[in-house]
Amino acid sequence: MTQNSASKLLNGDTVHRTKQDKKASGNGLVKSHCVFQQQQKRYRRPAEKNHHASCASPLYNKPFAESFEETPLLVAVLTYVGYGILTIFGYLRDFLRDWKFEKCHLAREREQQKDFVPLYQDFENFYTRNLYMRIRDNWNRPICSVPGAKMDLVEQVTPDYNWTFEHTGKILKDVINMGSYNYLGFAENSGTCADAASECTVKYGAGVSSTRQEMGNLDKHEELEKLVARFLGVESSMVFGMGFATNSMNIPALTGKGCLVLSDELNHTSLVLGARLSGSTIRVFKHNNMQSLEKLLRDAIVHGQPRTHRPWKKILILVEGIYSMEGSIVRLPEVIALKKKYKAYLYLDEAHSIGALGPRGRGVVDYFGLDPSDVDIMMGTFTKSFGAAGGYIGGKKELIDYLRLHSHSAVYATSMSPPVTQQIIASMKCIMGEDGTTLGQERLCQLSDNTTYFRRRLHEMGFIIYGNNDSPVVPLMLYMPAKIGAFGREMLKRNIGTVVVGFPATPIIESRARFCVSAAHTRAMLDTALNAISEVGDLLQLKYSRKNRPESEESDCFWYLESHQD
Image: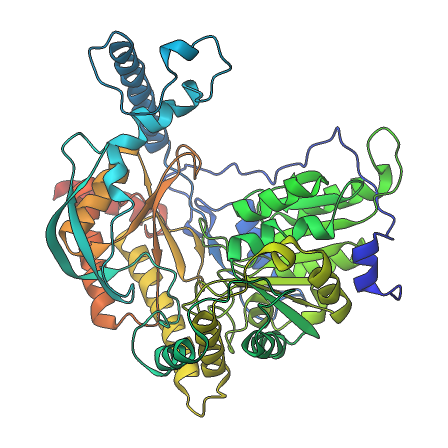
């Protein structure tokens, strides 16, 4: 193999160093709570200011605006108090369970095994027993239809406070789906994609029952890989049957002992697991903070490996296109500039951005108008915008050839199902316009319009919304633990299906509802959802934002007095 960039990535021929005992510096997330401050200076992270400042540089060819409004101080205090009260009652209930006054439904050690090494860590299950169980009915709701713009839910009740559930036999019809990653609306049971998948099932069957290296390599798989390579603008690509395993099983094939992985602090669990399984040294930089990333890169080159100070075999930067809990978009032009400056390698996870960003729907690289060859490893999944399953890795031919031999997903995992493969081919050709229609481009435009409209309306209503203005992932901040369950239940009463998220998936004071906008949503659907969100927001007092207040001091005072006269 020649000593080009791909072979260097595989063989580890670069000379980089780092220092273990230094932490990445933050970017100063201290925000002002002054009521009479001007609007453009209120509740904005310094990182956000950098986003706007960088737009003037040649790295950005379009405005890059993200919003992360500061948690109001009173709300933060009340959130901590709420978790404190729940913790106190949790210990009280555990005391009652120990004395058999209350039944515990979780798995626990037998009395005969009390001297054994514990199989179930009782303290680690504290959150599950006493906090999660109170709002468990907001998750795992059975769906009995296509999870499109609307869906049907099976009604369930619990006789024992969310420990178990029973189906009533009643179906909740036409629930507006604001939680699925169906960005382009290809999760459907009719149309050209569904018809093509159905015909493929008749011809090839539903499964392959073998790995790619044995008897599971179909002509459809090779057709898909060539199509993905053309779609991404790279030399070659490889597809896998599971999106999570695409990260967790391929990163260990690319890095190992003596390598350094620089990971964004908000990276997905699959990236974190893959980095840990690789045995590489891991350093975490602040989310989308280029100062933090550059400091780690500089220290890596200057100081090398711990103790020995030998050069790192390779440095791999792990980032995502769209961060699924924040709704933020990676500052890819700056990441690529740093990667080139310090001779590192870049692994880009486009699970949520592929198909959802860019004028041609080709992800965050297309969104910024960058050259795909500047990204060493392009990863993505087919589970979101394509309405299917699995994932891919694209890059130079030497890289893909290497992964075909060394990736655990390629060697040991069963091949992608034929109808799933055909679904991806049909939807991708639709996005590229190779199906002879303009349906793909229309869906891309519809998704962009829906995203802009939905975010703007929520801002106008007074909610605190996180993320980039162009991101179809829209987190709405709830903060307090009691409001997590209440929001999900109240929205379902109004026939709106939502996803609510809390600690430990988010920081303890940043619980949220996460909406995913789809091209399949009509304006009427979005208006119905927005009206319900506004109604529930008033009911639960969720409209915390102060960004819409007038800029001048006098108008701020007038607004305050006028609102209190009502």
